[in-house]
Structures are given as C-alpha cells and as structure tokens.
Length: 233
Image (cartoon, rainbow, N blue to C red; front, side, top):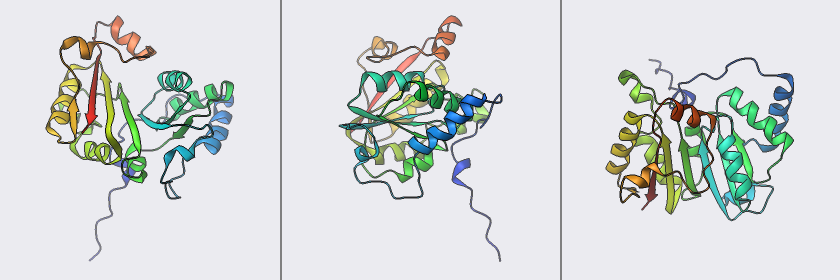
C-alpha cells in the first residue's frame, strides 16, 4: 500500500503570496546576481561557525525572518558592521527590493534566503545564533487562520534549538491578538523568558530602531506597536 506523500517543508510555515506585481528589469537582474552571491544554499552542510559565511569579519550572527523590503535589516546591518545578519524573505518582490538596494549600497555582513524560514532554521547548527527578529509578521487576523501564525510551539522549539543561551528573540506587531498570542506561547515555553518590567518596556522601540513604512502606516491608522523581547534561558 502506498504511503501518503509527505507534506513539503515549504508548506509548513509559509502561507502567503510568493509574488506580487511584476518586478522591474533592474530588480530582476539584481535579484539574480544578488542571490547568486549572497544566497544561502541548504544543499551543503551548514558551517559549524556561521561567522565564516560572511564576506566581512563578524563577531555575532543574527537572523531576521520576513524582512519585507529590507529597510530595517539594511539599517541595522549598516549600523552594526561587526555583526552578521541572515535575512529571510520568501516574497519575491520584497527580496527583489532588497537585492536592488544592496546592489547600490553593498553590505558585506548580510546573507539572504528566499524560501520558508523553517527550512533554514532546521539547517542551522544548534546554539549558533545570537538573536532572532520577527518584525510585523503576517497576523492572519481571522481566528480560523491563527494556526498559520509563525509563532507556534514547534517554531519556538526551533528557535530554542538554534539560539545561544542568553540570546534574544524579538517580536514586533501592531495587532493586539498576535501580541497576546505571542506572549502566551512564549511564556508557556520553558526556553524563553519575557524581558519586561512595566508597560513602557513593550511600547518603547528597540535601541537603534528605524521605522518602516508598514509601521508608519499602522501608527497613522491608530494601531499601537508592541515590541516584545524574550531571552533564551
């Protein structure tokens, strides 16, 4: 009797669109050349020391999942040249914008991955990351779709495996139900400890924060952002 085909990893945690409007020719060229140089190939084993993946000499390696157009990632990488950053964005248009921006202003401390984040998380060695950022992820507002949210027990297990002791998982959102969802899941997970003493701690942007177009729109529409920080214990 034939077994049911195994669910592909690409469907495990990415449910959004892969493409939007057609990208411009210069973006398409930048995307091809940028991924050829900066893209991460999961077909080869991950290095034991992720710092060796970067053109620049870096002391730490951090991960941003779903960087959108890349505004925050480019800003933080430019202002922290001694840290290496891996950026994940499956949405082609967002990755194309990022690749075009890096073509104009290269940064030697960035690597890119354009598929499902769970694939890369499972590829990474244990205790290899100094931080994970999940900033304004798709909130999946309808209750029947909440199971699609990236924050889940299985993905928190993934975070716990790849984060070093004392490393931070940072989560930002303007959607109250997702903020509460993340608090509940992280506080229930034994590997994470919420870093907050009072309300101003989660209403104050992170140090060195740059406001993205998405966040600016949320504030214009009277949605208050929350900035949560959890430490890997």
